[in-house]
Length: 279
Image (tube, rainbow, N blue to C red):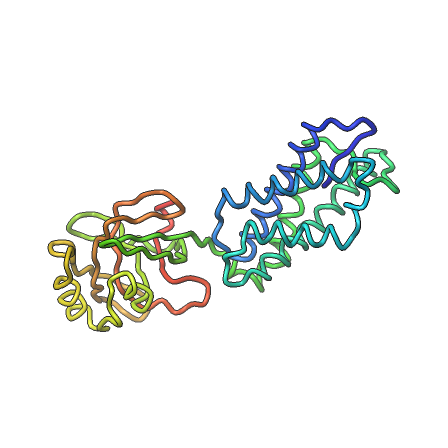
């Protein structure tokens, strides 16, 4: 929805708009602290690029109506982040980034001596598009550093399987976490007890690590796959976490050989905490 010249080449129009929409949706997700599902973002970007191409067809001028543009933008946000708990935050970030980016590209075209007044699209090169995006992302990150510092933390999709049951969680990738099992060396991901109980088929789990480990070891399929993992944190010099090894652990689609420990994860934005080095 950004690039056009007197003679419009469909492949160039699609490619540039696909790249622009992908970058904008990706940036909106990062700013909002959303799980970045890149295939969904790519699908939404492709839909936006197709709309951009259709809107330059002479007989389809109605596609440039403001109400329709807004509807398409919301639809793209739904494709990319419709499963997010705070979808409207992602949607608002996408529109804000798009507005800022559009203004930056327009300004770049004026500096280049191109008057795009009254045009549906602004003629820009790929280099100008990328540079404009980089500047916009830097400005938004700087302006929102204080209010969105916690939200901008990287959150990834965590998928667990055990004994035919599956569970999808949101995992914060914590750069300060290096938790691992001292015996096997496996990385340890801490999941909230309440969230993990569903995967284990239990209504609840004990807070005491030893009791929780005994409860886990008694479950079918977990014999020999339960351990106690020592840890230290702010306010706790030495503690223990009950941990188990599921049948499958995937983080952002990548399969891992990791343990799931049961702990306290009190955040509306994520259900688990994983070492950032796993990504």
